[in-house]
Length: 111
Image (tube, helix red, strand yellow):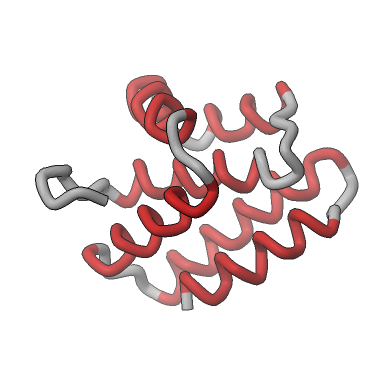
């Protein structure tokens, strides 16, 4: 993340992380996108989707890590974020190897 960029809010970071989760198996379904939209407002979704669409997975993970440093999450908030991540992962009733790998990476970043 460049120094001149503003840090995200918790709602923006949440939307971004969920987008990464939806694309973990390299395929975003309409159900996954609808689920993310239900958890955020339209403006945040559109802003973060534009941001996410231009990033590689490596850039995404770096941005998540950079923004987590500036946001103070409680244990309860992290647990809720993890629950939402699993909603996205399991929306297709499967938990692929790529989703499992991303889950482990994000677990290390979040905690």
